[in-house]
Amino acid sequence: MSPGLIIFLHGVGSQGASFTPLLAQWGAELPAITLAAPDAPFAFDLAPDGRQWFSIRGVTEDNRPERVVTARQAFDDTLQSYISKAGFENRLDRVVLVGFSQGSIMALDAAVSGRWPVAGVVAFSGRLASPPFYAPCTGTRILLIHGDADPIMPVQEAHGAAQIMTTIGMTVTCDILPDVGHTLTASGVTRAEEFIRTLLLPGSFAS
Image (tube, one colour):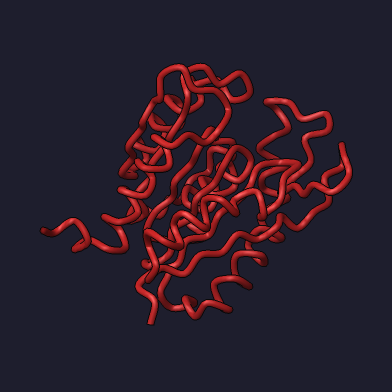
């Protein structure tokens, strides 16, 4: 039986396949862990071929929370399908969500809303966009990884998310990467892997 499941959640306009290099890397470095990278349920409405968790057409600070709430059912259905397929329905404490950008928004929403009491969430280049009616999974550990040169999601989004989630009783680590934009980097991926090992393979650092 696999000791854990990692579900990768891509950004808007992308696809699960965007994580293929990371799946290959972690498949080799974390061979016991089950990995999944679903496509978001909706077609990207600003360009062909991509997928989205919710539309960003006309999105504003005011209407973004409503869009996150509206996206929850389809997001939950997607997660449920992959979690069930992997045999983790009753083992959510062995599941980690790894999001990038819009995928991070949805992963953080899953935790602060209390819907998915998973072991942890890694949010690359994201923001907390959930409406402030929180019922957090306080047992879910959060790692925010954000570049201080991100032009899409300003680094202040990470600081703000960390402050709010800490205030509502969650355990949050915020790693700010210098001179990094809206992207995954080798250092960020390494930090994420170390974090996930502590959750799913705590003995793996033993000499």
